[in-house]
Length: 363
Image (cartoon, rainbow, N blue to C red; front, top):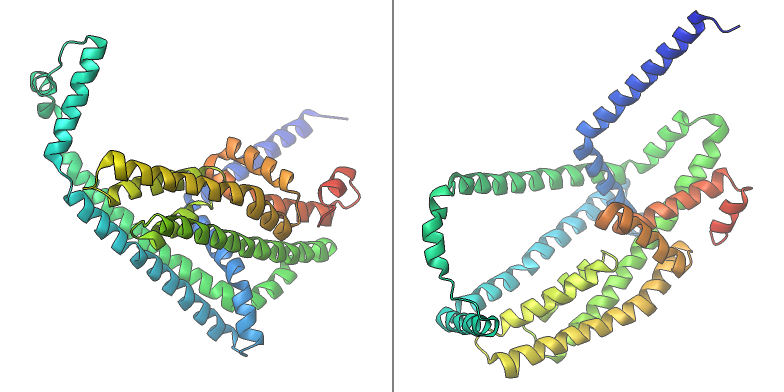
């Protein structure tokens, strides 16, 4: 018989559960930065796993030495990545310094007069409008100080984040065997084998996925580099590398890379005639990039991605599209790894389910 005491106890237990869940969610929200560091470190461990295995098996490195060597490789790659863009920034700044602002102003005024004549609009003196509106008296120049402080704070956070990620990654790589033994002691006995098998398979598939992604980016980088070198683009190596990195973002990244390549091509040719030199070469570069994207989207990307995670190309496309609509760019980037993890877990725990068996028949 249900009594008022039982009902009140049930309500209290429900409220306590809600309170505990709320506290946990709030705690996770407060430490979200640490969670991001952990996720990035785990990602680096997956990427570094083939190198770690090579150092241990072939070169007979110990855990600490293999982890330190791998971490040094990551740091050198990061430093090289940063210094790779220094020549590009300097050259583009020099090109902008050569810009004939007086000629550009005359062209702008001429275009403005043509638009006014076409639409029969009375001339609008922008300088007079700004003066009458007293915009300069409204502007709070303290925002410049705030902006500078925000930049310095951002750089400090980036530095702290890099140090934290590398520190965590080192111990993940060094003590991964110990972590596995500790996890085995904590896991429930009835599901221990299933959980460990899931972790092993996830590690295997994600390692293959990231290696396949690096292979795909390498192919795109080489094709971009060929296009830029054919048309004599300055800093072709750096531009091709940057645009290839943007291909990490499915579908949107290549578009951003194409626009960026067009802009950098135009800036690199400042001082040349616009109609006979700048515009034609920019169009040729954009067409070349579109051809590369067509090759990547229809040949290299479906083959490499589907083979690395054992999924159908249409399945990958739909999952990426749905994740992009739901979670934006971040969702598109993490769609395939998360989907692969879910497939492995579902197959390990629910192998008899018909829907699961259909979705995971390739695994």
